[in-house]
Image (cartoon, rainbow, N blue to C red; front, side):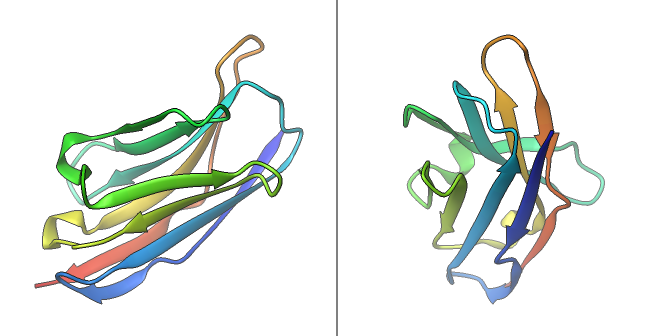
Length: 118
């Protein structure tokens, strides 16, 4: 089992910045990926950004150049630096941890609200 605790959400004006953090604890296996997903009202949950334990990253096109994902493997923590925020970034952001090799496992955080006012 892996537990994920998120922090850093809140209310920000358009053009502003926020940093989300997610700390993982429990049975942390190697060859994993940590990422952030978001879900806006009436929309499906979508991947925002992901980073593997080896440091490879992946971003959804709409946040490229504005968001940066990073991780501290010693602390089992992933960060999402969000700059130039837009109203359309408003959503509940969920931290995710998944194992990339067998045994495959997938865990979610409780979610943190990000609201961008225009």
